[in-house]
Image 1 (cartoon, rainbow, N blue to C red):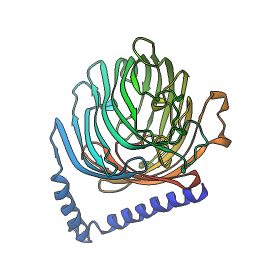
Image 2: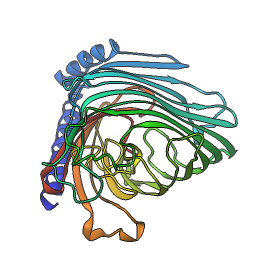
Image 3: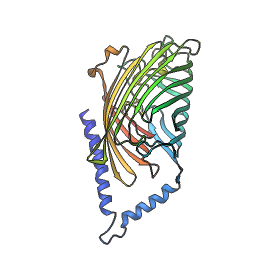
Image 4: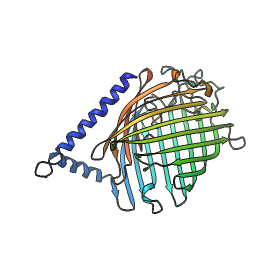
Length: 388
């Protein structure tokens, strides 16, 4: 873990030194643009090919090339569509956001996704539509002691739709309900000892869950907050007649953001707990890996169980022009029972990443992260928006 933190700090320091060098070269003694600014102009012209922005709408579209342990090399495109709202106040501004993505991987895996976050005068509507066709996906078993050398390949095909309907009691305080639908198929299991027929979810299935949401959001920006907090309490109930499995999921999450000296330096904290009861299919079990959880766990499915917790701290630094850097450290654990949670049994991660501000007027970032985890795990992630 010590080596992970040292590596992360070294990468971020390297980015910082580049930023300082660019700032020093930006303008010469007589105020004329230097060679560095000429380079910026060329980059700006290139960025303009992929983006359009006016007072109402900002559109960015980029080719996507990324690698993750789960997917292999992934290629495709992603787009960000931002629509300005007239119903928000300046001290709590929330634009509407649409985020379509389509990618293919060298493991012949196809993912199509549309995320949306719509703000009306009194309502916030969020959702995600996802189609995933994943031959050669990996399953490591259930529990916190899985080995990277023991897994089974299988085919995982799914269609899911997750939606939230939140009513604003006050601008920063919302109550609402969530709906989760999923159709999952499981086939071509390579090693039935790792994924035996007794595993919940072995036969796939259809699931529909509903539940209440309570959210308190005082962040000064929902893309790249520099102050405030985000508290979310949520429950989902999967009942017979609507779902092939009966279980409940309870989630509590908090995020907190601090400015250090000025808004170029941000400290972000996150903690989350997922608790379930009932018969949870393995493909919906809480986990701790992924681009929005502990970056550095080498596979999204590496650690799954009935309950999970994780926490992380991230330092974010504006570097130069529309580039920023980040470094983080975190810990988390899955367990069959919540009383088994223990820091001694946790997995630890750390890493660093680079961000590019996709829209000029908002700090809406495309990010590339490199994470390292306990036992030599690692991962590279490309995503839209911050991890939290």
